[in-house]
Image 1: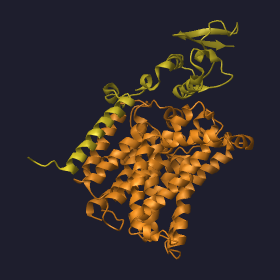
Image 2: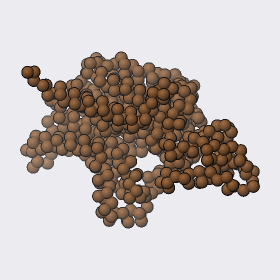
Image 3: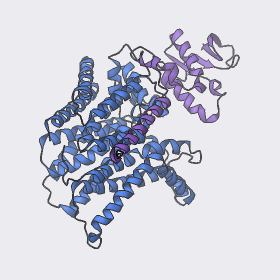
Image 4: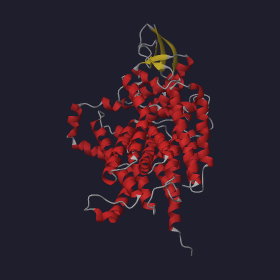
Length: 413
Length: 137
């Protein structure tokens, strides 16, 4: 790791740390320090964008400046961003209370969702004159800077970094700056796949700290985070069972996961205590499932809506290119029980593909058994674009790592 | 003749596509320099944040501010001019844009698009566009 990247890692660490401190201040009702804490976050973010760049990642700095300008010049219009995320932020801002959504007012706003990002949005509004429809969503860009700068540390040359920004632009489109959480979910998910890998490979206290911050943040972003986290853990456990049964770092990983789950479980406890139901679960009943399980036309409908989107199309092309390479590289192992991987990037790609597969199946059944009329298609079309983002982005990222890397070991450049 | 460097050409094509994508994102986000130079002011973007078909929400919002009311209710007539698929979205825009004023079932302030719907107990205290604000006893 060179000095520049150490600085970037520290910067990411502290941005994420202060964002979590902001959430904890809200949880503990410490309203006195909001402004100071938010100013520190802004300072660290600006430092990351303007002063922590080397000639390799200058392109990323330009990307952030450009997106900041677009974000500040556009109002929040998208349905979910308005009805859920920024509405929660607005409630926190006006009531000065993170628990205000637990009264279940306006139940359409998914009051069981964690207000972690909303609390940051509410905090940054304290820096300006009052609530408006432009500035609160800046919280998303600040939060996105951590996984974006983390992920670019593993890219080895300018072409990879350009492709990385290309994927962000084409897969997330405006979702990084429109107040929705799907881009954040995808970026953090891709980061935690790498962090799981690093945690199981080495004992490094900085990685421990960064993992706690990233895992905690990831679990607090959206409901889907929990399932993605669960699938990642499941696949890594199976992977260890086949490849490294006596991994000494597995215990560290478990401890970090347990620690990271505390804020997530705290919020779930509050939701349960206040009897707030989950929107997804409201539509689930056995009769409904029975009627849909043999409806194969619906299967086709959902499958096409989930796969035939631009982002998935880009991801699947790259996925099949890498799979073809895999086929050529590892065909001698096809008759043996396990594949001996050549390098870390292949392992990561393989693990991520399995997690994505599980997540895809999960999404498929969520759509199939939801009580929403899929014939209207508006819901499915709007959803499929966003819900498959973690799959498409992570597939693109890991494919880039596999295709353009000649090294064997994953390390910070 | 100079050979065209393939990697440089690929980089250029990718960068150009990205530039076009940024323009598309600006367009889809309805980017405006007016908002950019006022991003720190109260209520910036309120008018731009709601699609034109829900414009009556702005009338309701205006009357809430002018009459300084903390809670209100509404009559479904206010969104009956819209297609049915937009009703729920319209309802949600009322809830979230009017906050901190809350929608309460037995509020004495009621918004309606009908001039004579609410009977003798209610009087019109304000009106904007096609929306009337009633105060009921």
